[in-house]
Length: 166
Image 1 (cartoon, helix red, strand yellow):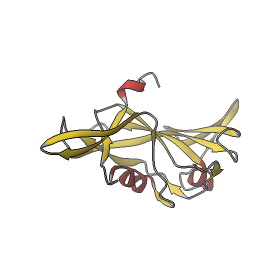
Image 2 (cartoon, helix red, strand yellow):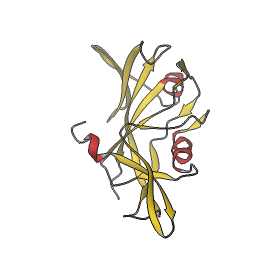
Image 3 (cartoon, one colour):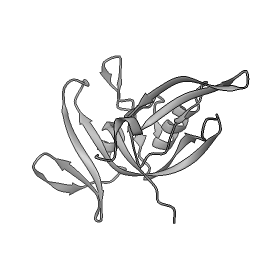
Image 4 (cartoon, one colour):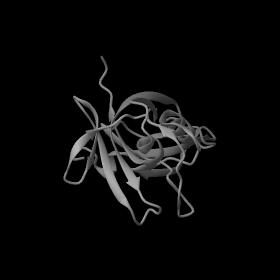
């Protein structure tokens, strides 16, 4: 997390108006994804970037944190969101509205167990050399599959690392 400085992880919503690029909105990490319902992480990202005013990263970053839409109107949303190990994030090119797709890989995620964003328990899943492992306070790590019900319905924050080209 030392790499994830708040100012380094920025996104913008841009339009081209009268021959110039206009920034309509901007934000920092974690990037909140809008509610889409069921689907995969890549679909959630595509939905975020493909809004009427396109959104994308404004500059490259080694780490990106995304917030999945798990709470609407104060209630927990248990939609199945499949976590893919590799995704593409839109990134604006320089000061234009042109977007390139940048590959990122899933390295960890935080699971929220509880009914409201103000109460509950958090667990962390990390990718190790032995595969996905689920942590819980001082308990030993336990194996986890991205297809298990827990990450499908309760993954809340996902940490993505910029993929290194082969």
